[in-house]
Length: 543
Image 1 (cartoon, rainbow, N blue to C red):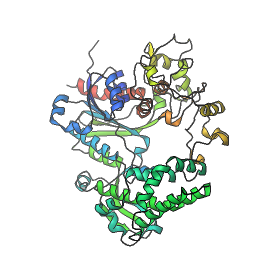
Image 2: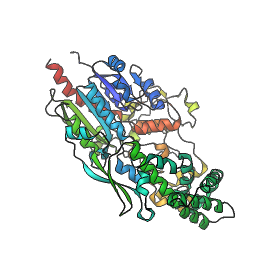
Image 3: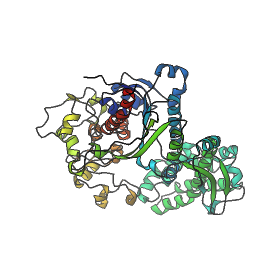
Image 4: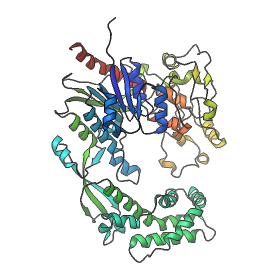
């Protein structure tokens, strides 16, 4: 039997180590180092990959002492978080997603390490034009060097009805912004109530819960000189409205009136926050316009264009291929789609493709295949009760091939789930397989401020005989076991991601759920690694 060369790997933004796990399962790779900032994920990575060097920050890779320790690196893998500003504007009050800078760090790290190949994993939408960077001061040289396509873009800071003379001078001067902007704590104390404005009952409960801090903040607001400009005027009026609301017996109408009174001050604070982000991140603003509200005119470039233009450039020397890989076609029991960008040195191969899954709808692995053998094993609800795990009973005779593959440890860890409250149990009993929050009668839909906009993944009871949807933090989504009236456990979520039972997660319960949801399914990672080996092995045989 001929010896097969092993390739060294550095994992950037490693998380708990799903990508690394899949690469290691091939027996063809070993991990030199992993870079991960999250302490809980780092703890999990260290426990399961104890031979690797662990670093906190990707920027450490540029230190001479780190490079000396790493030496030559064959392959770089990793999934830098990337939300893109278009998504950020829809979902949050931020103009810029800080994660975009992490993608740039990933690109710089590849150029610095100069591996034979790299694999970048990300959300499936990254392939689209939606994910974009705002052009920063200093980007011009890179854009020109790599001929990156850019387009004019807009960031709306404020609606037209609130624009006033002199507003541009305020948002372009950091001292002015700091002078008018509230502390994050004060903003959140008021915004948390404003966000519930469409649910009168929840609004009143929220206001009462935050009464002490809101009244304290109102005294600060009413001490302002409301005659200086509309920003201070509306802040002053918000303070008065808060005090009036809490000064007598209130009704739902009073709470709704309060929200209308604080709305302008909230919108001004969002404007100031976005303007501060533009300045803090050195975003190039060509000009501001006032015709349709306060709008910052900037330039943007698609994230995928940025990555491919730099790493696919002749000076970088990588032949690139990218696409969306459905995890279910690689044996993963979930309909997860991930964007994969693979680059291999042009000196190794002139033509590069992505792997193709061999599973079809006729033989997809299902939720039952992944977790069916665990259905009679009671979960625990406290992390402390999972310290030593629990001995697995003998596998049932009808266990699936996937179940056998994942059941690689005599001890089961992380079979921890959220405690079932009486209210949750009522919901669980009502929801059938494949149904969700929207299947509930109105009297059981009391939790959410905007029922119509509640996602279909909330209170989703999984179907046993189908792949699941994309596994995220299933605790936050409150996924329900197919036949048991309880939340899905961390281990069951990990099984759906194809983590073997020998892979143990660390940290708080929520940290464990989050690590599982953020991970790349190891079975998908293994398929990518095996495919990559075919190219790298060609280089070894030509030496």
